[in-house]
Image (cartoon, rainbow, N blue to C red; front, side):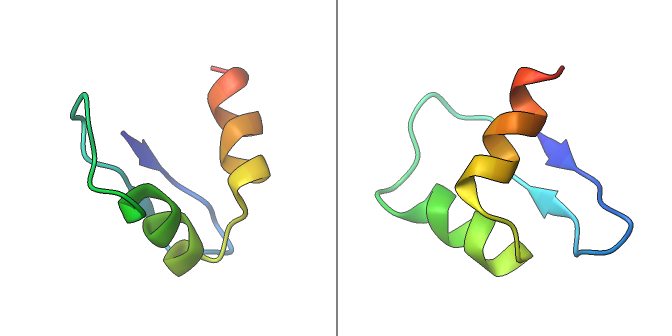
Length: 45
């Protein structure tokens, strides 16, 4: 899954059933987004 934002780095999340603990939050943090922002984007699709 890939999220594109004009004002932030692209967020690319592996498409696996399970991710290592903390991996998803770490990727979100590195992109400069919050978990809530990603969840809102995910719900709108």
